[in-house]
Amino acid sequence: MSLRLTTLAAALMLAGSAYAADQIKVGLVSTLSGPGAGLGVDIRDGFNLAMKHLNGKLGGLPAEVLIADDQQSPDIAKQAADKMLKKDKVDFMTGIVFSNIMLAVGPTVFENKTFYISANAGPSQYAGEQCNPFFFNVAWQNDNLHEAVGKVVQDKGYKNVVIVTPNYPGGKDAVSGFKRYYKGKVAEEVYTKLGQLDYAAELAQIRSIKPDALFFFLPGGMGINFVKQFVSAGLSRDTQLFAPGFSADEDVIKAVGGSMLGMFNSSHWAHDMDNAENKRFVADFQKEYNRLPSLYASQGYDAAMMMDGAVRDVKGKVGDKAALQKALEAKRFKSVRGDFKFNTNHYPVQNYYLRAIGKDANGRVTNKTMGTIFTNHADAYVASCKMK
Image (cartoon, rainbow, N blue to C red; front, side, top):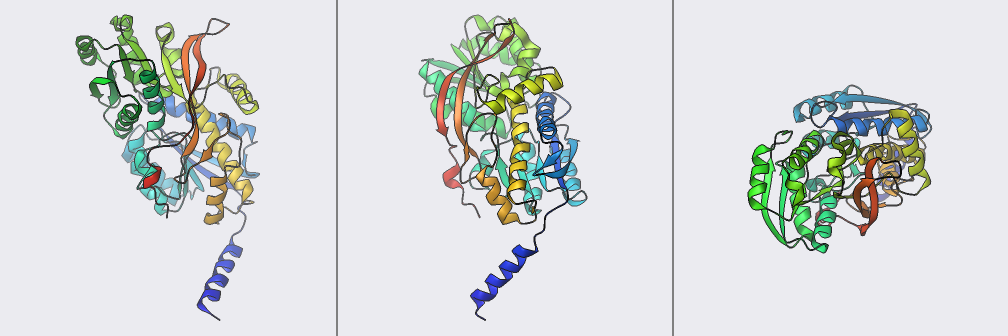
């Protein structure tokens, strides 16, 4: 028998040995305490709502979801992930909010040949040279929402802009994305500590610069405190605020209130999107949790639905990694954001929208979709991805 035939026979035997699992295990590690807790809680709640819609099953198989709080610590996240991978032997992992944590956990997940379905963190490293067949991002690449805001600020003709963002990988991606499409003057790039809640020094610096627009990316409690302090300081009278959707979503609006009226932000999803999947998701999320979902919740929901479609596609044979990868790439589910596809680096190619914060018919302060910023937009790093 030739070497080629021998190799083929071995491959067929290996494929034939894959068997359907009797249960699917998911490890969900997220930030469930501290300033960033609102983000992780929404991812968890969105994921759990999907599991309720799926009757506790993924691909028709009983599913167990193991949940751990990373406390916004890379070390704690790694410990939790190690346990889930080696002791619990999960079939999928998901949930991480922050890119520095994703970069810390990723190598162990990939070495274990476990598929990670990111419901948020989308570091540029994993979109480009460090792309990996076991990493899929069902949300975005970090730069994308910032790119969309940059284009809006550029198109609206603002000439003097200040940027405020945390000093960590996601924050640096934010600046890169914004400046990729905004070509006017950036008077200052202000970098804060991740988790910072007092912005007195930064606001004094902004007051001295007198920008006509300010772009900020401050997730969770950081953004809540910043907007409150910015408005209280009277800076909103002369400076227009812009943010990516995750710094101006329903969790932030609920905490801040009317101070956010008139603020613009970008998103790939909105609660007023007119499709059957989204209408069901938004209505049931409000019934289940008594609040409007944020885009984080929509991404947690989509992550579960993506797993469900892929497991169903391989008929439960999740041990067949090649088949499972193809099923994940094929995106066998309907997203609450409408249609999108995966690029060759496993990041979405999708539309991005402009939202404005106003009052709805019931007087509720919330986001309203104003129009499309980008259509079928891909990230800037895919050309550097040589998927192995």
